Length: 81
Image 1: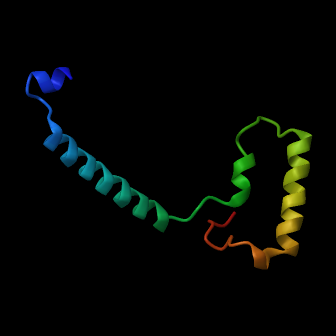
Image 2 (image 1 turned 60 degrees about the vertical axis):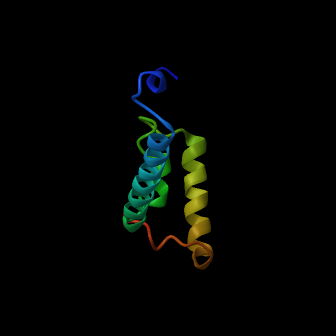
């Protein structure tokens, strides 16, 4: 309201800004999609100094599951370990 009252902002500037932000976000999103994703098990690393036993067990179970059913999971786009 203040910026409008002193002539620094208006509806046209608002529309231009929204379009620029949308363009910037979509451009950045497109660039990010081209990058390799982090290895899937990174979600549990570097969180704890020593990984809790229950999470370590879950990670082992997940590794076994992915090994057995890898054809059902699109993990090829992830960076190698």
